[in-house]
Amino acid sequence: MKNNKRIVHVVGTGTIGEPLIGLLAAFSKDLGIDEVTFHKRTPLLTDRSKVLSLEGKGARLAVDEKVREKFTAMGMTPQYESLDAINRASVVIDCTPVGSENKERMYLQYGQNAHGFIAQGSEFGFGKMYARGINDAALRPGVDRFIQVVSCNTHNLAVLVDAIGLGPEKENNLEKGHFVCMRRANDLSQEGEFLPSPEVGKHEDVLFGTHQARDAYYLFKTLGLDLNIYSSAVKLNTQYMHVIHFNLRLKRSVMLDDVIQRLRANPRVGLTQKKLTSLVFSFGRDHGLFGRILNQTVVPIQTIAVKDGNEVVGFAFTPQDGNSLLSSIAAAEWFLYPESYDQRLKCLESCFFEEI
Image 1 (spheres, one colour):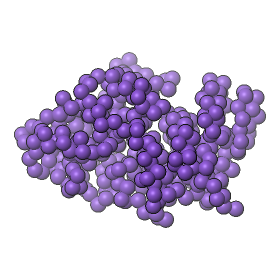
Image 2 (cartoon, rainbow, N blue to C red):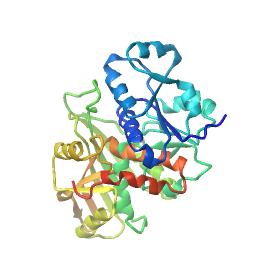
Image 3 (cartoon, rainbow, N blue to C red):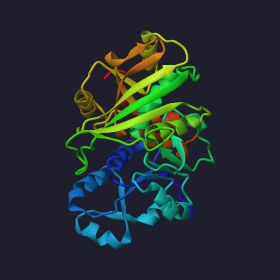
Image 4 (cartoon, rainbow, N blue to C red):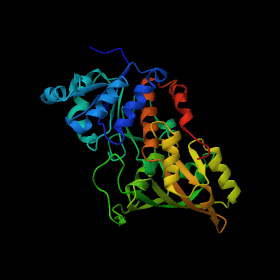
């Protein structure tokens, strides 16, 4: 039997899942969501405070039946069994590293009532690539049921191409783009994977180098664009922010002032005079929502330069999961309200900053 309530179900409570559940619950009225549920796989005492906090915000816990008693014994209160939660949901957002596996194992079988399913950046092939404000025009109601929100660094790369290489007129003026993604070692919420020193990455993709450029290519491909872009990656021993060095060679010459104006005109770009990622990270902690800003990129304005009249170089900070969180919420709202989701997302505008 189809549920008439608008229910968003989040699978996973990690770096993306935890703040996403909190945001959806906190803004549920403005977003037109009747209920937020979330799935936690493993009962852990170290995660009890997180689960209780999310429950306190109004989100309802779903667990696998075989571990329900363990959650209850630890003081948590499961409301639903995991497959029942999927069956009830209008939208399912998978925030695990096994979204494609879950699609084949569960969503195609148990999610018949859902308008759609959303996975995160690592799940290449899950569905249509999406980044809020980049390719909304490519979404097709009634056709696109599976959406992959691209990674946070792909968001950054894409908005730089959009703002500088395409511009307000959305004309492809990009001859070639190369990006070096300098990634933080791990998130503050993660216990492992910290590095003692920088670690360079492989160029595993013959055409695109690393997945950031590959995913951005297919993101713009949904708009009929065929871009010449390439990326490299290195992990740095920091927990603050990812940084991207970009080099965009344009077909036509451009002045530095024009580049800065294009960045200012893009509502998803934040500009900053700060040169330390720690200061931008701190700004998000103090002034953002759940410690996050939702801009897709933050560009230190002093680093931008134009070489030989048509080559734009500079650095950009990635607001980590903030941009992915926004796109995940936007995709969920598009599934629920395809005609009016833009208006409903206005409740999040205070989390965008022109200057940081």
